[in-house]
Image 1 (cartoon, rainbow over the protein chains, first blue to last red):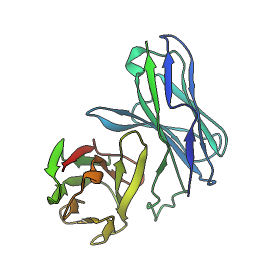
Image 2 (image 1 turned 90 degrees about the vertical axis):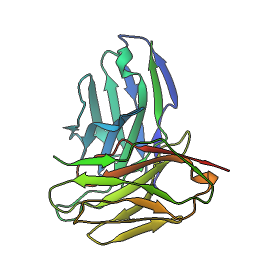
Image 3 (image 1 turned 90 degrees about the horizontal axis):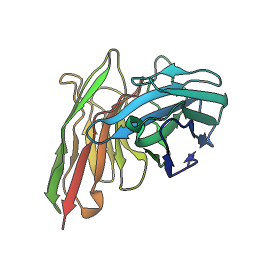
Image 4 (image 1 turned 180 degrees about the horizontal axis):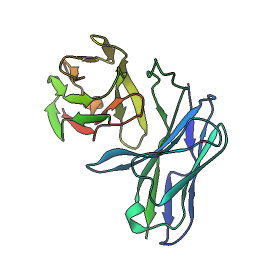
Length: 117
Length: 108
């Protein structure tokens, strides 16, 4: 089974701190994703990556950046944490999708609940 | 762009009741459609999928049929159990957009 591991389950940070959320997958997947999950808003895509050193903005990239130096690791960075970034963050990975076959499901980690005070 | 509209919850049912959670989509091309489930304290996991029109995905007693004519992918189960209590998400392949999620609570 694919395993997606997020480094922290719970994290508490102060406003203005630089925060790193780490995600590692063990199945050699090309694609990796970061979402945040908020009540009533479902999952919103922050950033995704189709390959090492590649990144694409999702729907809500403001206030975030990402890093993908190795295929198995995808980091989400909050440059200066703010209270409105308090949320559940979910990482996911999937196989590479061809133009004609968008059918690869996502495999999710268990999430990191971040609280910014 | 692509989008998914999902029935709002929460939904509360008694054990053995029939479940339907509605999902409609807007997409260009022919995406695959997915239902994911999130049990308390866990990440999302794939429940079922369908890759083309009229396909039926099924798993753990849940079913959903890919209806291109109505752009829908409704989730159904004939007899829910307490252990089905979770949040259910409908999703499109491609750019990986999700619905808002529907929280299901099943009471004994």
